[in-house]
Each structure stands twice: as structure tokens, then as C-alpha cells.
Image 1 (tube, one colour):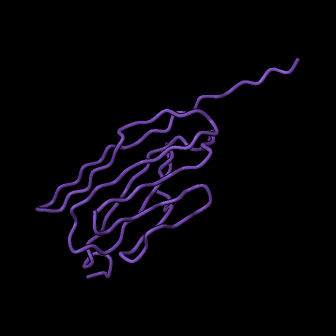
Image 2: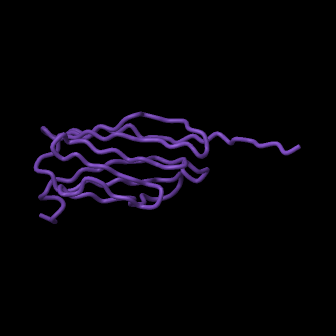
Length: 122
């Protein structure tokens, strides 16, 4: 008789709220636990203006930031392997969806929004 074991997976989420003047970026949920093979989604709301680009990063424990997806104002959806990001620039909202979570996924996931001045190097 074969025994199948489902391994639980904890995906850590860095709840980040950045405020500078009228610019603010807020991510949810603060943490999330999913089983291996399940899907999960993180949300990012922002008030940054003028909008330059939005970037999703992953940071494993003890490692630097790894860029997952970069989105410009004209992008509504981008894929990178099991990661899918959506952007609704008019609603100032983005989401990051992870398909079929794996044991290598526990990390901090970070949404960074740059103004158009920052994204062009000025």
C-alpha cells in the first residue's frame, strides 16, 4: 500500500507599507500558508504618482532580491514561469499569482513601485 504525504508549505509575505508624501505602497496578506501544489495570490495597492513601473521581487532567507516581473503602465498581465502578475494602472492595483506552490517558494515577496522620474534615472 502506497502512502502519499502532502507537505505543508509556508510562504512568508513581507507586509510593507511605504509612505513618502502622497506616495504609498501596501501589500496583503501579511503572511500565507499553502500546501504544496496549491495556488496563492498576493496583492499590492499603491498611490504612487506619476507611475513609472511596478516590480515584483522574491527574497529567500539569506539571499538578495531576485526580480520576478517588471510591469510598465501599458502592461496588464505578465508571466514568468509559475509566476503571473497583473496590473490595473487605473485602479493602482497589482497582484502576483503563484501556480502550484513548491517547497522552494517560501520567501519574502515584495512589490516595488517607482515614479516615472525614478524609473528613467532622473
